[in-house]
Each structure stands twice: as C-alpha cells, then as structure tokens.
Amino acid sequence: MRVLKFGGTSVADASALRQVLPIIQQQSAIHKKLVVVLSATSGTTDSLLRVARAAGDRDEETVQGMLEELARRHYWVVDDLIDSGEERLAIRATIDSLIQSLTEYCHGLSLLGECTKQSLDEVASYGERLSTTIVASACRAAGINAQWLDARTVVATDDNYQHGTVNMARTADNCLAHLLPLLSEFDVVITQGFIASAPDGTTTTLGRGGSDYSAAILGAACNASAIDIYTDVSGVLTADPRIVEVAQPIPVLGFFMMREMALYGAKVLHPDTIAPAVEAEIPVRVLNTFEANNTGTTITASGGGSNVTAITGLPLCMRVEAPLIQLADVLRRHRFEVVYQEASLTGTSCVVRLASTIQEGDVHAALAGIDATAFLCGFIVVCSEQTLSQPSLSKAVSALDGTSGVRISTFSHGRSLAFCVLPNDYRTSVSLLHSALVGSALR
Ligand code: ADP
Ligand code: ASP
Ligand code: MG
Image 1 (cartoon, rainbow, N blue to C red):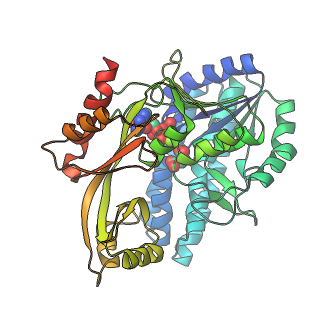
Image 2: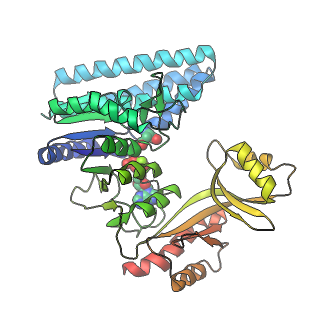
Image 3: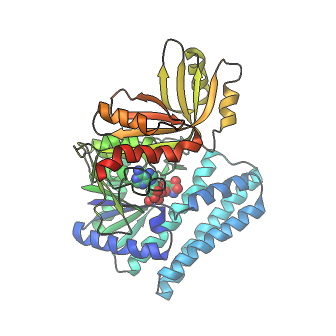
C-alpha cells in the first residue's frame, strides 16, 4: 500500500487535476491499494481563516462575499472537470450542503461575536473537505474504484486546536477499524490532510502545511511501503527556487537534514512529517505533479552519503540580546518561536521567528524594562549532510563580505552554519551563499 499526497497547487483547478488523475490511476494499477491525502485548493485555507475572523468580528458583508467566492471557485473546478451531467449535479449538491453548513457555522460565530482557535479549525476544515469531495467524484467518473473518507474519523489528536498533537496509538486503532476495511473494498481511499479530531470529536488541525504530516501519520499507521508527496517543484531543492533560480533537486536526502531544512524555512515539507516515517522506516519521496517523469527527492534514514549542501532560511526574524535570566523569563512567558539560542557568561542572544501572530512590536513590548537590544533580521542556515569543512566555512563567510551578514555559529553537530543578515540583504545573501557553496559543486 502507498500513500500519495497532493498539495494545494496540485488540486488548484481542473487543469492541475487533469495531471493528478492519471497519477492516481497509474499508481493504483501498480500498487493496487492507495491512500490519497489531499490539501485544500491553493489559497482556500487562507480565505477560510479570514472568513472565520470576519465572522467573529460580525463583518457579515465580508463573510458573505468570501463564501460566495469560495463556492464559485469550487463550482468552476467541477464544471470544468466533470463531463457527466448527472455526476456534476450530484457533486454540486454535496458542495452546496458543505457551503450551507459552513455558512450556518459562520452565522453562529457572528451571533457570538467571537472566533476561538477551535472555530478557526472547524472553518478551515472545509477547505480539505471540499477538495476531497471533488477529487473523489472525479476519480469515480474516471473509472477509479475510489471512496471518500473523513480523516477526522481516523487521525486523533489532543484538544490543542490549530496544532493538535497526534495520538499515534489511537490513530493506528482507528486505521484498523475504519481505513483498512475500506481499502479492502476499494482500490483508492481519498481523504483530507491537515484535519483531525480531538477526544470529544471536535475538529482540530495539525498546523499550517500539515497535510504532509497527515500523509506520514497515515503511512506509518497503515505500514505503507512509501509515502509520495506530490507538489509543484521537482523535489527538495538546494534553495528556495523563488530566490535562487538555479536551485537544483537533491536526489537523495537524509531525514535529519530534511527536518532541519523544513524547520528553518524550506516550506516544501512540514517539519513534523519526517518523525513518523523515520520510526516506521518508510521512505518519503517528494515529486512534481506537473513533471511526471521527474524522479524528485527520496528522503531516507541514511541520506545521500555525498556532500549534500543546501541553503535555507527565514526572511523575517528578530535577534534579541539580553541577560540570561531575564531573557529566559521573557521567552517562557511569551511563547515566542525561538529558532536559535546561544548563551555566554556575559549574556544570551536568540533569534525569534516573526509571524502574523507575533510581530516586531510584540517582541519590543515583551522586552520593555529589560536591558536588551533587539533588531529585525533574516536568519539563513547552510545545511549539510556532513560536517562543514574549514574551506567551506571560509567560503561561506567570505561570500557574505560586503553584506550585513553576521555569522552566528555552526550548530553543535557541526553540519550547519547560521547567519543573521539585515532583512533587505536576505535574498542577496541566500543567492551569494548558494553560488559559493552549492553552485560551484553543481557545475
Ligand atoms: P504544497 O501546496 O504542494 O504543499 P508548498 O507550497 O507547501 O506546496 O511547498 C512547495 C513550495 O515550497 C515550492 O513551490 C517552493 O516555492 C517552496 N520551497 C521553499 N524552499 C524550497 C526548497 N528548498 N525546495 C523546494 N521547494 C521549496
Ligand atoms: N491546507 C492547509 C494549509 O494551507 C494544509 C496544507 O496545505 O498542507 O496550511
Ligand atoms: Mg505544503
């Protein structure tokens, strides 16, 4: 049995789905049984979270406009993709009832005038529920023996809404009870990534980008032979292709380096994806939906063995320096996401990742009254499978000569090197490091 996961761009519209259906068809012919995990269509989760917040703010006009747009977008996909009039009507009716229940839920939020984390998860879940409904119908219309499954009956978490912690034992039991029986009856089970359920049955989610993680959880729980993550690039690349055009796919990559790349900004995989797959020794492949012949990246326990290096990073962070005890206290109280921390006798410095929920002003406010300095920065990490050699370290440091780059440290395992740069120098610095450390190896 295999798990295939398709991300938001792969299910974005009818033309993308025309690439997805033959992949499902071919893979099901080869491997007999497939679990297909899908994201919401691209941009939909962002829209749904905005809808939920607007509902909590009682901004009914925005809610109505956005829900209409959401429905329209999904109808377009159906009309463009499904030829049979009968099948089209049936799936339109399912979409109607999903939009209807979402509208009623949002109306409830408006009446209450509040939007909790639990409500955000409930509203966000509609994205994956809509995309899987469409793809399951399209599969059946294409003659694939496919069945839709609500992932919330299988993936079990605690009640930490927006970032549920998965209960693997309960999830494995649920797979035995619900998923495996379906797989013995159908060739393909289509289910949602990202969404799960709390012990009381309410909807939770696994954090943004969590569909990759869902695929790994289900793969581990069902003992899959491989987990294939289909996306819009040809594997894990040596840098973010939106910054470094010449970034190249890494053919074989170790679990450890992949996790590090994901933690430090390589959005291509959710960082938690790797853990269940490592434990179950299941290889994870990252493949391109739009280039079916590309072999992508295979992620394995031992990795490529060769000297694989990649540049990754977080464009917007804050570097904070403060006395140890005070800084530790601030970090404990404010739950900032600290991506790097270094202590010395004279003080402590750390790098805090900024996000829509934690902005520059929040960090300054948290540091008020403390003898601290804090400034905006980009955080760049040179990740490697092997200990970085002295010549590589020197090349990296001299690559950033003339930029604002400050080398912070090699990480304790010696395989990664981190830099802080001013945000305006972030993209240039990533490119410079790539051409110094990776580009030359590619030529
Ligand atoms: P999906 O919707 O399929 O889950 P994501 O948008 O989450 O896809 O991740 C794929 C994107 O990750 C790519 O389009 C690419 O722009 C970005 N990305 C950032 N860093 C890397 C990297 N090192 N290798 C590959 N892709 C990367
Ligand atoms: N749809 C969710 C998100 O946008 C999960 C995912 O795409 O992986 O975060
Ligand atoms: Mg993703």
